[in-house]
Structures are given as C-alpha cells and as structure tokens.
Length: 264
Image 1: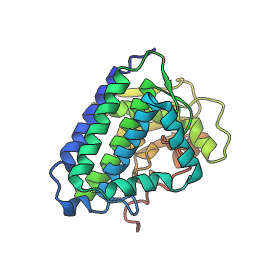
Image 2: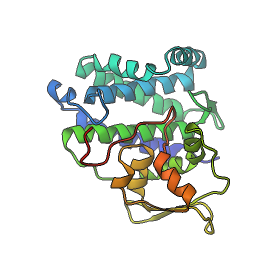
Image 3: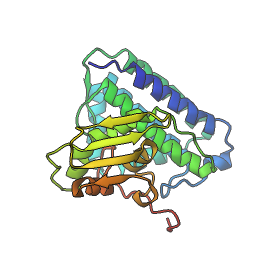
Image 4: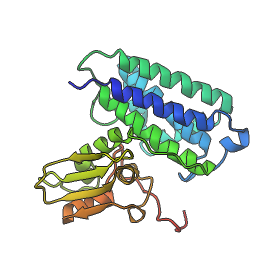
C-alpha cells in the first residue's frame, strides 16, 4: 500500500500557500465576490473549514459522521451551501482560526491512521491517501477562486500530480454521474507537469487519448475553467466526450465555468 505521507505533506503545503493569501485580508476583502456565484472569499474558506471538519469526523468519529450524512440526505441540495454560509458569517479572525485548527487536526489524524484504514464518506469509502488527495484538490480549487477574487496569479507546482491522478481515476464516475455508460477501454493520458516532467496514465496503444498541460487538466476536472479556454487535445469520441463532463469531485454534475469573456 502506498505511503500517504507525501500527499498529506502536499496538502499541508497547499493549505499554507492559501493561508498566506488570506491571513492579512481586511474585512472588506473577505467579502469580495469569487467566481462561484454567491460565494465570497469568506465562503470559500468556510467551505474548506466545514469539509475539513466533516473529514475529521469521518476519520475519528464515524458515528458523528453518520449523523452528518443523515443531514445531507435530508437536504441534498443545501447542506454544502448552508455550511459555507454559516462559516462565512463568523468574524474573519475566528473563521481563519477555525480553518487553521481544523486542517491541522485533520492532517494529524490522517498521519496517525492505521495502515489500510477506510473511512466513510458521502460517496464510496476512502483510504487515507484518497482522503488527503480529495482535501488537496478542494484546497487548490477553492484557493484558485480566492486568488481570482484578489487578482492574484498563483504559480502551479507539481503538487498537481495528486489532482491529475484523481482526475484520471474518476473518469468512470464522470460518465456515471451524467447517466452515461463509461467506456470499457482505458484512455491514454499524457500531461506535461509544471516542472516539465511528463505524467503518463493508461496503455500506450489506447484508442482514446488526452494530451496537454497538467495544469489545464486539473482546471478541467475541478471545473475551474471552460474546456474551450484550455489547451487539452482529445483523440477518439469517448475521450472527447469525457473532456466535456469530467469532474473529480463528488456530488451531482457541476455547472462548470463559462468561457472567458462570457457573462457569469
């Protein structure tokens, strides 16, 4: 079984980088609108804090987590937004402190989890590495929204490898959540990392292929950019269809982002 330490370390590094963006914000800046409709910077950080808390319960108190799942089932369309709204209503200093405390506790719980542990989630159960990867994906994606609101350009790193791998592994989920039958054959995925390294997934002789920058692939599967604005190339109808519906996050199909220049 793969050692989850590298992805936990990268999760912590990604969180610290986002922390630097928000640590010195004024109250007015916390209220800036982000690309997610109705969500301010405070909502973005509140959502991360809320999901970290849910993840911590899944790892350390599964009975309590089961009660959270029951709440989610009772209000499937609202529970995520409600969690963000509640946290966003806190004073910025308290929200920041809560996020820091929660993510630290989660990282420690993941580091000390037993080998082979599986944790309940709103979808299929997760391993330690999968839980850390999901949190890294969300931290990076919501961090992009924060950066966008602040007009800051973030420099991509090879921490994206975890998100790219998750994007590849959730291919069949993307088809299924849209009511489509996943292709039987694997795709060949070739992505150029920020460092210039080539990340390769799938058989060399695959008919369906996707190539392009790893950053663009991660933007696509987290639905932080429109496919038309990304330098991704698909070969084969199934691979082409995938790029229209890809999502690495759990839940119903996302709305995605409009192309650049379109009204939000």
